[in-house]
Amino acid sequence: MNLEENKQNAISFYKTAYEGNPKKAIALYVGNIYIQHNPAVANGTQGFIEYFERMQTEYPDKSIKFVRSIAEGDLVALHTHQIWPEQDEYVTMDFFRFDENGKICEHWDAIQQVPKIAANENSMY
Image 1 (tube, helix red, strand yellow):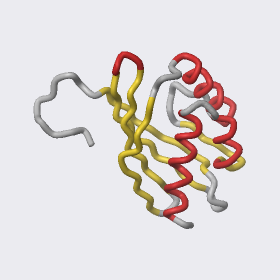
Image 2 (cartoon, helix red, strand yellow):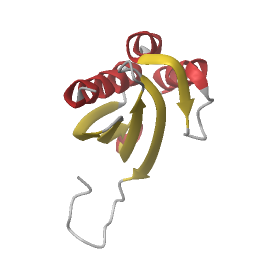
Image 3 (tube, one colour):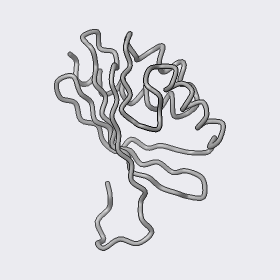
């Protein structure tokens, strides 16, 4: 496995889908199986496509910044900063598993809204 290539492919996959082209993201970066662990998204590629198409329709002005990426073995972790309508900000941590062909085959994530008030002055990034 090429860890740098996997990191770049995970970022490109997420960015392509997030910016409104989930079918292209699936075609370029996903293997024969796609296992989804986010309970808001149906399992498989069709569920992924439907979710991101709906998000693009409902929230076309959302944005994403990739803060860091980490690769180890067949996993890539992405730490992102997302801004949604009305300046709602979110921190996400996504994990992607790659198959033996270098294609994404599994996804987990966690999301947290950036609070307006924090108990400390440390950034969430």
